[in-house]
Image (cartoon, rainbow, N blue to C red; front, side):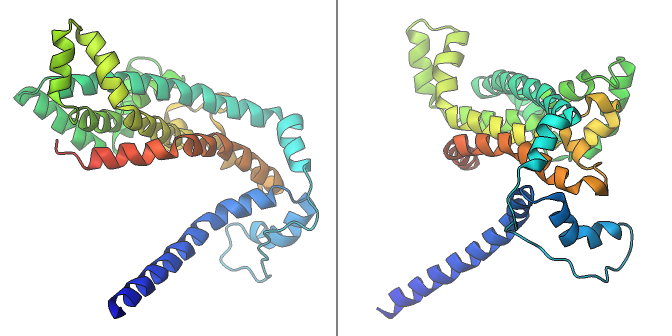
Length: 293
């Protein structure tokens, strides 16, 4: 009886602790969304001291964080979506850069993972180990080589300089390979006995079994590239082709209200994609993590 009560207390404390961290984690997002419905005057009254001291070391005035607007207004959204075409242009730049990366990376990674899972050997295991090493490296390590290669093949300052390296990211290959190796070989052998070729086995046996991992890859790749900054600043210096993620960081202090609205609009695709595939995301990552490669 006493042990049951102690266990219940621990569960309650752990829940409260996790809830507190969840609230702290969500506060910036909630603040961004609610402030996007405030007028420019209200935002200036609350945060003007912060932006007036950009680069300074001390803010003497009190800064008030407000989560509920005094008066809800959609003026910031109207200005962002209707009166400032530059915001929409940058938004579509993000779409043009990210969608090809997601689609082609999933296609390339699926085929590569099938090869690693279908055929085993020393050479392929060494190559797969190299994939893991590359996956552990942060993007900043490979940024200079990508720049040199892009310059050598004359695609620097074009969208291809960002899209092509993004297509061949090793993380997707690793995750899908671990998932495909989980599929029993008896299923593959049965399909082969029924006369199925390699393409049919890949498309009708392996891909349906990897639905959770595929959703995980799509969501993670989309979110990662939707927020890219460094590679764009180095490989794509033309401002007219840069995505909204870069543009948001360059908004001046007189457009803070517009920045809140634009940031909220920018979060919508990633949030909708995550909510749509949340179940598959957890399933795909948990399934791959529990495998023995």
